[in-house]
Length: 256
Image (cartoon, rainbow, N blue to C red; front, top):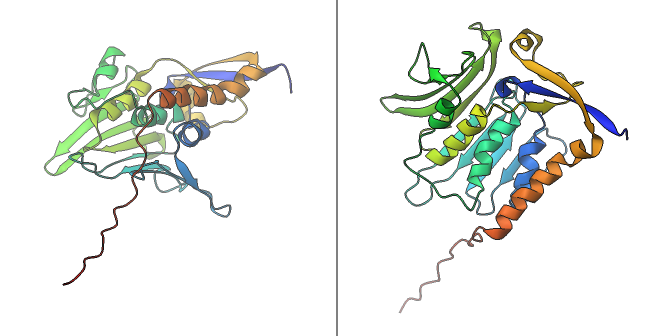
């Protein structure tokens, strides 16, 4: 293994490409106790939370969102779901999954998912009620129309169909602090690291990015995911989630 490896840092981060799915899936499994199904003949990953209330599915379908997260209803919280396109940067998806699995964070119904975007300089969109990034490439909107209620994010370098980079959908029942986790990761102005030899972004969009390639110690690159797992595992160890309860089995009734 060489002492140094090339890493390209790309900004804005919503144009960095999908990245390595392990950034999301490995910490969920190793740090947060999510179990996984495995079929070596199928190119998909499914992970379920310890309480069996959440299911993450990664399915490389060219005609559908690659990432789907579904959560069952819990008490007064209705069921909710989120979907992300293939080129959604995994670090942005992790903003939601990290918030979901954080035992130290409680739901804040009054949280405003738009606030991290405003703090990052996003402005009122020209053609809808949401906010858009300063370069007008990324858009976020809370769409409500009659019975429809959802959060919608879209990144596109042109209005043509081929200009669409990725889009995400979060149902209106998604807890606000989880949506805020997503928008905080989206608004973060820190460039994202990518392998310069793996072109994950279409050439027609590269003129909208700022890329800088540097040499980093190979050990630092190799340990990035491991360090992330350790950090999340420490978070879980200090505030363990309650164990899943076995399903209730009714006792047989005895007739007189």
